[in-house]
Image 1 (tube, rainbow, N blue to C red):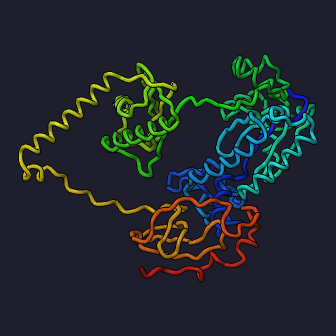
Image 2 (image 1 turned 45 degrees about the vertical axis):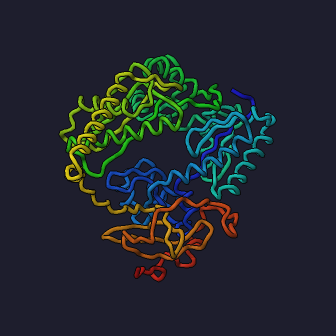
Image 3 (image 1 turned 90 degrees about the vertical axis):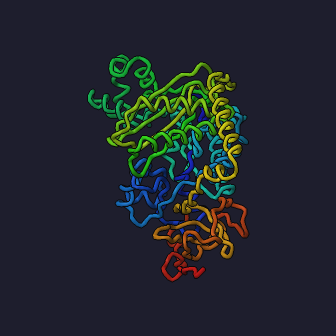
Length: 485
């Protein structure tokens, strides 16, 4: 434990929702929910205006809609969130070489490693300056916790929300932690909390009073000993600048259960390709392929296969994923599929058998092409597959779009062959709403605009009082028009 609160924890406030409010002036000061918007979607982040109605992260979107039907429900835009996150992380790296990102909106910083004096006044000044810099650079707010240990700094930042700063002075840890519920401690999930509850342990103080021996008996040596130390306020985990990923994975939840075996196989192949693309983007390879299948009754199965060596070959991962799928019964219906690769490495070891299979497939395709060419143009025309009709464009709520006449905007909603777009930018006033047919040739998907740096961009925070953001009545019916294009 340090003798000064030189470990900083930053947690951005309602990050995804706040970024959407900053990008969309008409949503400032209004309830916003970001996440999956389908019947099986889950809330990723809710704005503070939506939380008043009881909406929380990880809640089913259907339940959130019942609690707050008038909120704006938007699909995530991770391209924008990554851009904003990188700007925030640059500010943190300017404070210290030891920055440990936990997610796009959360990180630990070792201020002592950055040369900040080990004094409460000095670290507090750094924290306040960081909050001002984040607001100036991104237009968003973040909460800061300062303490002598990572666990305590995270607890402090949670207590500081929203848009605040809390310092936990060394020596006050046990007094502060005592009355808190045991779920406050890292590593205490629902199962561990239930085990402790059955033993009559509900608070951090009761956890410390139980003693290490009792916690080891209840939870096992490693978990019990670690939990006892944290209940006493002891946490000697260092801030680690590089956190090595243990796996790369992708998964999709389907609006309707998949019962067609061919469709399930096709989805697994598609997920395998996405997983390999992420793997290659990270410059990594892996030797264990994993599939995840969640059935109609929410039962979840995982299957894995370890290869002879690490690979980033899509053919190898696809073949392994399909082999694993054959061991799973999907006849009852599948609501979620996932493909992952673990056992990561920085090099690849080519799978000779997979190479041979790929080469053989290429030779067979070449032979078919030669045969068709030798049979004359009529045979080639006969074998030519009929072009598939182009699927209709899908306009998800929150999607960035550009119209040839009206410029940049975002999708408010779509249905029955129409798409409704609000035309505004992060630095404009709340914009007008127009409706188009879904296949309007003048309308196309766009890229996220930067939250700051636009014409006459002010330094006002993204989250504004409702009386300010809604004063012009831009969300009323009088602001809507239907395009005649």
